[in-house]
Image (cartoon, rainbow, N blue to C red; front, side, top):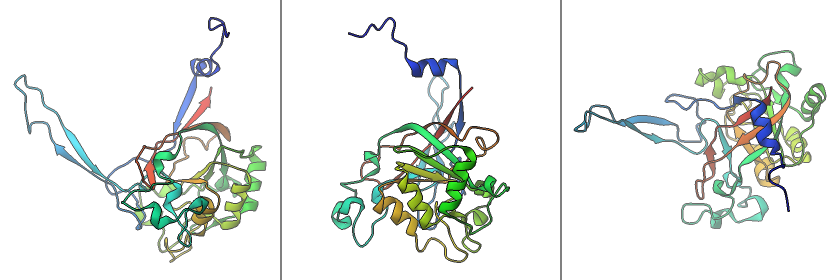
Length: 276
Protein backbone atom coordinates (compact mmCIF):
# COMPACT_ATOMS: atom_id res chain seq x y z
CA UNK A 1 0.00 0.00 0.00
CA UNK A 2 1.29 3.45 -0.88
CA UNK A 3 2.09 5.70 2.07
CA UNK A 4 0.14 8.83 1.10
CA UNK A 5 1.86 10.82 3.83
CA UNK A 6 5.24 10.55 2.09
CA UNK A 7 4.18 10.39 -1.56
CA UNK A 8 5.08 13.54 -3.49
CA UNK A 9 2.67 14.83 -6.09
CA UNK A 10 5.20 15.89 -8.70
CA UNK A 11 2.67 17.87 -10.73
CA UNK A 12 1.52 19.79 -7.67
CA UNK A 13 5.15 20.40 -6.71
CA UNK A 14 5.89 21.79 -10.16
CA UNK A 15 2.89 24.11 -10.00
CA UNK A 16 3.81 25.25 -6.52
CA UNK A 17 7.35 26.11 -7.62
CA UNK A 18 5.92 28.42 -10.26
CA UNK A 19 4.57 28.07 -13.79
CA UNK A 20 4.13 30.82 -16.34
CA UNK A 21 1.05 30.38 -18.53
CA UNK A 22 1.07 31.62 -22.12
CA UNK A 23 -2.31 31.97 -23.81
CA UNK A 24 -2.06 30.69 -27.41
CA UNK A 25 -5.56 31.73 -28.50
CA UNK A 26 -6.98 34.65 -30.42
CA UNK A 27 -9.79 36.74 -28.87
CA UNK A 28 -13.35 36.03 -29.95
CA UNK A 29 -14.96 39.24 -31.15
CA UNK A 30 -17.30 40.56 -33.80
CA UNK A 31 -15.56 41.21 -37.12
CA UNK A 32 -12.64 38.85 -36.57
CA UNK A 33 -11.28 36.83 -39.53
CA UNK A 34 -13.25 33.75 -40.52
CA UNK A 35 -12.85 31.30 -43.37
CA UNK A 36 -15.58 31.74 -46.00
CA UNK A 37 -16.31 28.03 -45.57
CA UNK A 38 -17.74 28.63 -42.07
CA UNK A 39 -20.36 30.80 -40.39
CA UNK A 40 -18.72 33.62 -38.47
CA UNK A 41 -18.77 34.74 -34.87
CA UNK A 42 -21.38 37.12 -33.53
CA UNK A 43 -22.03 38.27 -29.99
CA UNK A 44 -24.75 40.66 -28.89
CA UNK A 45 -26.20 41.60 -25.53
CA UNK A 46 -29.58 39.93 -25.25
CA UNK A 47 -30.24 41.59 -21.91
CA UNK A 48 -28.76 44.86 -20.70
CA UNK A 49 -28.44 46.38 -17.26
CA UNK A 50 -31.58 48.37 -16.64
CA UNK A 51 -33.84 46.23 -18.85
CA UNK A 52 -35.06 44.59 -15.66
CA UNK A 53 -34.30 46.02 -12.24
CA UNK A 54 -34.98 43.91 -9.18
CA UNK A 55 -36.75 45.28 -6.12
CA UNK A 56 -33.40 45.65 -4.35
CA UNK A 57 -31.95 47.68 -7.25
CA UNK A 58 -29.92 44.83 -8.74
CA UNK A 59 -29.76 44.15 -12.46
CA UNK A 60 -28.00 41.72 -14.79
CA UNK A 61 -26.76 41.54 -18.36
CA UNK A 62 -26.23 38.53 -20.61
CA UNK A 63 -25.35 37.82 -24.20
CA UNK A 64 -26.28 35.58 -27.09
CA UNK A 65 -23.44 34.04 -29.10
CA UNK A 66 -23.63 32.45 -32.53
CA UNK A 67 -20.58 30.84 -34.07
CA UNK A 68 -19.39 28.00 -36.24
CA UNK A 69 -17.26 25.28 -34.73
CA UNK A 70 -14.29 26.29 -36.88
CA UNK A 71 -14.09 29.96 -35.92
CA UNK A 72 -11.33 31.65 -33.96
CA UNK A 73 -8.76 29.39 -32.32
CA UNK A 74 -10.28 25.93 -32.75
CA UNK A 75 -9.55 22.24 -33.20
CA UNK A 76 -10.82 20.00 -36.00
CA UNK A 77 -12.49 16.71 -35.18
CA UNK A 78 -11.77 13.79 -37.50
CA UNK A 79 -15.35 14.10 -38.81
CA UNK A 80 -14.47 17.49 -40.31
CA UNK A 81 -13.12 16.11 -43.60
CA UNK A 82 -13.94 13.08 -45.75
CA UNK A 83 -12.35 11.67 -48.89
CA UNK A 84 -14.36 9.79 -51.49
CA UNK A 85 -17.21 9.47 -49.02
CA UNK A 86 -15.09 8.05 -46.20
CA UNK A 87 -13.91 9.40 -42.85
CA UNK A 88 -10.76 8.33 -41.02
CA UNK A 89 -10.86 4.59 -40.44
CA UNK A 90 -13.09 3.97 -43.46
CA UNK A 91 -16.34 5.11 -41.89
CA UNK A 92 -19.09 6.03 -44.37
CA UNK A 93 -19.46 9.80 -44.04
CA UNK A 94 -23.10 9.91 -45.19
CA UNK A 95 -24.12 7.31 -42.65
CA UNK A 96 -22.03 8.88 -39.90
CA UNK A 97 -23.74 12.26 -40.27
CA UNK A 98 -27.26 10.86 -40.45
CA UNK A 99 -29.60 12.73 -38.11
CA UNK A 100 -27.62 15.95 -38.16
CA UNK A 101 -24.78 14.99 -35.81
CA UNK A 102 -21.81 12.66 -36.25
CA UNK A 103 -22.14 9.23 -34.68
CA UNK A 104 -18.38 8.65 -35.05
CA UNK A 105 -15.40 11.00 -34.74
CA UNK A 106 -17.46 13.79 -33.20
CA UNK A 107 -15.53 16.49 -31.36
CA UNK A 108 -16.95 15.20 -28.06
CA UNK A 109 -14.79 12.08 -28.50
CA UNK A 110 -11.54 14.07 -28.47
CA UNK A 111 -9.84 13.64 -25.10
CA UNK A 112 -8.34 16.65 -23.32
CA UNK A 113 -4.73 17.18 -24.38
CA UNK A 114 -2.35 17.59 -21.45
CA UNK A 115 1.02 16.72 -22.88
CA UNK A 116 4.37 17.91 -24.20
CA UNK A 117 4.34 20.30 -27.15
CA UNK A 118 7.14 21.37 -29.44
CA UNK A 119 7.28 24.68 -31.27
CA UNK A 120 8.93 24.75 -34.70
CA UNK A 121 9.58 28.39 -35.59
CA UNK A 122 9.70 28.47 -39.39
CA UNK A 123 9.67 32.27 -39.47
CA UNK A 124 12.80 32.39 -37.31
CA UNK A 125 14.39 29.75 -39.53
CA UNK A 126 14.21 32.30 -42.34
CA UNK A 127 15.37 35.17 -40.10
CA UNK A 128 12.03 36.95 -40.32
CA UNK A 129 9.11 37.73 -38.06
CA UNK A 130 6.57 36.60 -40.65
CA UNK A 131 6.71 34.27 -43.64
CA UNK A 132 5.64 35.73 -47.00
CA UNK A 133 2.13 35.18 -48.31
CA UNK A 134 1.70 31.80 -49.99
CA UNK A 135 4.93 30.33 -48.63
CA UNK A 136 4.83 26.53 -48.57
CA UNK A 137 6.41 24.95 -45.49
CA UNK A 138 8.28 21.80 -46.51
CA UNK A 139 9.34 18.71 -44.59
CA UNK A 140 12.94 19.91 -44.97
CA UNK A 141 12.05 23.17 -43.22
CA UNK A 142 10.30 21.38 -40.36
CA UNK A 143 13.32 19.13 -39.90
CA UNK A 144 15.70 22.10 -40.02
CA UNK A 145 13.63 24.03 -37.47
CA UNK A 146 13.58 20.99 -35.16
CA UNK A 147 17.36 20.62 -35.44
CA UNK A 148 17.84 24.36 -34.85
CA UNK A 149 15.74 24.23 -31.67
CA UNK A 150 17.12 20.90 -30.49
CA UNK A 151 13.69 19.30 -30.21
CA UNK A 152 11.82 16.53 -31.95
CA UNK A 153 8.03 16.02 -31.95
CA UNK A 154 7.10 12.75 -30.27
CA UNK A 155 4.28 10.17 -30.31
CA UNK A 156 1.08 11.34 -28.66
CA UNK A 157 2.32 14.92 -28.46
CA UNK A 158 1.40 18.20 -30.16
CA UNK A 159 3.55 20.01 -32.72
CA UNK A 160 3.06 23.76 -33.16
CA UNK A 161 4.33 25.64 -36.23
CA UNK A 162 4.98 29.37 -36.16
CA UNK A 163 4.67 31.35 -39.40
CA UNK A 164 4.28 34.79 -37.81
CA UNK A 165 1.06 35.27 -39.75
CA UNK A 166 -0.97 36.14 -36.65
CA UNK A 167 0.41 39.69 -36.96
CA UNK A 168 -2.33 40.21 -39.57
CA UNK A 169 -5.19 39.10 -37.30
CA UNK A 170 -6.55 42.64 -36.99
CA UNK A 171 -6.62 42.93 -40.80
CA UNK A 172 -9.05 40.17 -41.87
CA UNK A 173 -8.56 40.67 -45.60
CA UNK A 174 -4.79 40.25 -45.37
CA UNK A 175 -5.05 37.47 -42.78
CA UNK A 176 -7.39 35.37 -44.93
CA UNK A 177 -5.19 36.04 -47.98
CA UNK A 178 -7.72 35.11 -50.65
CA UNK A 179 -5.88 37.18 -53.25
CA UNK A 180 -2.31 36.96 -51.94
CA UNK A 181 -2.16 33.50 -50.38
CA UNK A 182 -1.24 32.39 -46.86
CA UNK A 183 1.85 30.50 -45.65
CA UNK A 184 1.27 26.96 -44.49
CA UNK A 185 2.13 23.30 -44.43
CA UNK A 186 2.62 21.42 -47.71
CA UNK A 187 1.70 17.75 -48.26
CA UNK A 188 5.26 16.49 -47.78
CA UNK A 189 5.48 18.42 -44.48
CA UNK A 190 2.17 16.86 -43.41
CA UNK A 191 3.64 13.40 -44.02
CA UNK A 192 6.68 14.42 -41.93
CA UNK A 193 4.36 15.31 -39.06
CA UNK A 194 2.48 12.01 -39.33
CA UNK A 195 5.75 10.08 -39.30
CA UNK A 196 6.45 11.48 -35.83
CA UNK A 197 3.25 9.99 -34.42
CA UNK A 198 1.83 13.24 -33.05
CA UNK A 199 -1.81 13.52 -32.00
CA UNK A 200 -2.35 17.13 -33.15
CA UNK A 201 -0.59 19.94 -34.97
CA UNK A 202 -1.38 23.63 -34.87
CA UNK A 203 -0.39 26.88 -36.49
CA UNK A 204 -1.19 30.58 -36.55
CA UNK A 205 -3.17 30.73 -39.81
CA UNK A 206 -6.78 30.13 -40.72
CA UNK A 207 -6.25 26.96 -42.79
CA UNK A 208 -3.04 25.33 -41.43
CA UNK A 209 -1.95 24.41 -44.94
CA UNK A 210 -0.43 26.49 -47.73
CA UNK A 211 -2.96 28.68 -49.55
CA UNK A 212 -1.83 29.76 -52.98
CA UNK A 213 -2.66 33.25 -54.31
CA UNK A 214 -6.17 33.44 -55.72
CA UNK A 215 -7.03 29.85 -54.81
CA UNK A 216 -8.73 30.40 -51.49
CA UNK A 217 -9.95 27.40 -49.52
CA UNK A 218 -10.98 25.35 -52.54
CA UNK A 219 -8.60 22.36 -52.46
CA UNK A 220 -7.22 21.27 -49.09
CA UNK A 221 -4.92 18.24 -49.53
CA UNK A 222 -3.19 18.63 -46.16
CA UNK A 223 -6.52 18.40 -44.31
CA UNK A 224 -7.13 15.08 -46.05
CA UNK A 225 -3.65 13.80 -45.16
CA UNK A 226 -3.88 14.85 -41.52
CA UNK A 227 -7.52 14.15 -40.65
CA UNK A 228 -8.57 11.34 -42.98
CA UNK A 229 -5.34 9.45 -43.66
CA UNK A 230 -3.48 10.07 -40.42
CA UNK A 231 -6.16 10.64 -37.78
CA UNK A 232 -4.25 13.68 -36.51
CA UNK A 233 -6.17 16.74 -35.33
CA UNK A 234 -5.51 20.26 -36.64
CA UNK A 235 -5.58 23.43 -34.52
CA UNK A 236 -5.92 26.72 -36.40
CA UNK A 237 -5.82 30.47 -35.71
CA UNK A 238 -3.33 30.16 -32.87
CA UNK A 239 -1.13 32.97 -31.55
CA UNK A 240 2.52 32.41 -30.62
CA UNK A 241 3.86 35.90 -29.91
CA UNK A 242 3.99 35.10 -26.18
CA UNK A 243 6.31 32.10 -26.65
CA UNK A 244 8.53 32.94 -29.64
CA UNK A 245 10.84 35.44 -27.92
CA UNK A 246 13.31 33.50 -25.81
CA UNK A 247 10.85 30.87 -24.58
CA UNK A 248 11.79 27.16 -24.79
CA UNK A 249 10.87 25.17 -27.88
CA UNK A 250 9.27 22.45 -25.73
CA UNK A 251 6.81 22.88 -22.89
CA UNK A 252 3.73 21.55 -21.18
CA UNK A 253 0.55 22.02 -23.19
CA UNK A 254 -3.14 22.04 -22.31
CA UNK A 255 -6.04 22.00 -24.78
CA UNK A 256 -9.62 20.96 -24.01
CA UNK A 257 -12.35 20.91 -26.68
CA UNK A 258 -15.94 21.64 -25.75
CA UNK A 259 -17.97 18.40 -25.61
CA UNK A 260 -20.24 19.32 -28.53
CA UNK A 261 -21.89 15.97 -29.20
CA UNK A 262 -21.55 15.02 -32.86
CA UNK A 263 -19.79 18.26 -33.81
CA UNK A 264 -16.94 18.62 -36.30
CA UNK A 265 -14.89 21.18 -34.36
CA UNK A 266 -14.70 23.27 -31.24
CA UNK A 267 -13.36 26.64 -30.12
CA UNK A 268 -10.44 26.14 -27.73
CA UNK A 269 -8.10 28.15 -25.54
CA UNK A 270 -4.75 26.31 -25.70
CA UNK A 271 -2.20 27.09 -23.01
CA UNK A 272 1.58 26.68 -22.87
CA UNK A 273 2.92 25.89 -19.39
CA UNK A 274 6.40 27.34 -18.99
CA UNK A 275 8.56 26.52 -16.00
CA UNK A 276 10.28 29.39 -14.19
